[in-house]
Image (cartoon, rainbow, N blue to C red; front, side):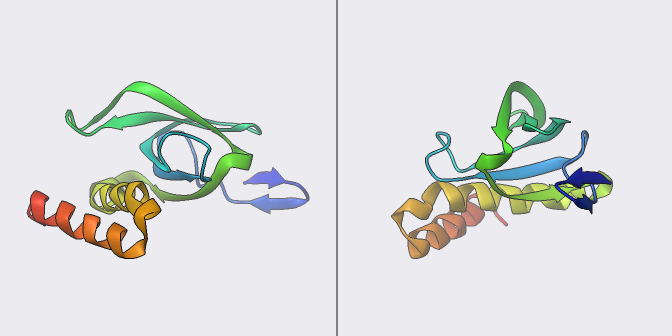
Length: 117
């Protein structure tokens, strides 16, 4: 449990978990970042980003202050394998949403077709 204000809340974004972190519009180059949670504190969350080509967590880290986090999809332990399919869809959707919802949905459908899902 962690204390936020006067509330006790369960720790979801915990080191070792995998997360697709969605940041508020205009915060960073992309809206969605997928990675393994490296650190969490009162200032924000730090992810080691997923290298999709190597299918591993390596390379750059990404830090998001709490005030810039819009939402997150989180997987713990064995949930990680199913998570990657959903997270990659979410990343494509968020990267295309500026063109409208229909365009974002079409981008996800094309991505799934390309990957043979």
